[in-house]
Length: 83
Image (cartoon, rainbow, N blue to C red; front, side, top):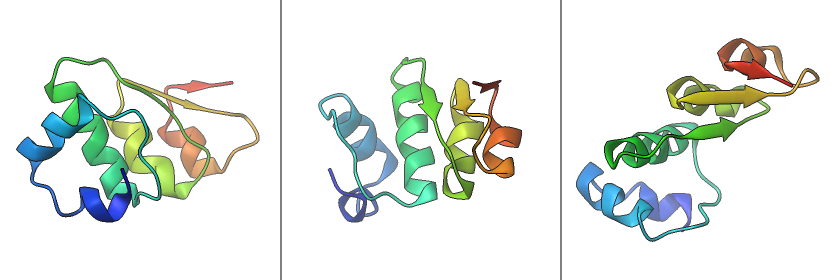
């Protein structure tokens, strides 16, 4: 599912979509966070691996945010675990 399609969905529609979708692509930072919140609303525990400023909202909202030591400072600051 492409980010432009996610932006058109309300939260209830997105929550249904995340149960049947494996790949999300070309998403804005806020769309990434919406997908994480939708998964969490359905009882999923969510880990997110991010490397840049555009991943900060998703890293913050995930149950476990993961970054790498060589990533952008904002990603490392937002992560729970730095590899």
